[in-house]
Length: 160
Image (tube, rainbow, N blue to C red):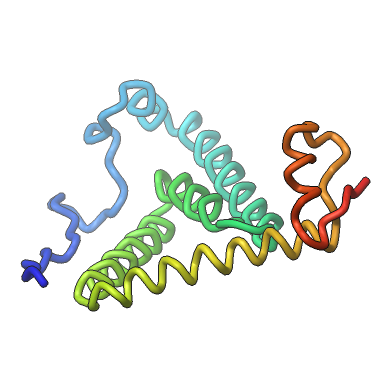
């Protein structure tokens, strides 16, 4: 097993305590202009807050679906919110740190552990998809080519 050098903790390299970028630090011209005008910036923050919250709510609504569910939507919503809100940026930073720690931990494990967890993950997702197809069937708008293969899967019938 190869030795991993520890990665330094993620740090903000800016000099002030404000986590968000100031208007003059923003790399996008269009956003610099919005942040320069307090009225436009207030409206922009409301829109960003609405879009980020909507994505997180959609994540909750799709979380029960097979596959990754709402995790990508939740992270995307948090990233959108983090573009304008310091609390969201701090939370996103904590999530990033936890994912990094998990990845480093997994890299330190024997190969059979990482492969085994991958196989178990794929098996769990497959079981979730199969269970959903058994309970609900597959939709009538499913292409015939896919439906013919799904008919071969034990317990799966056309839905509605």
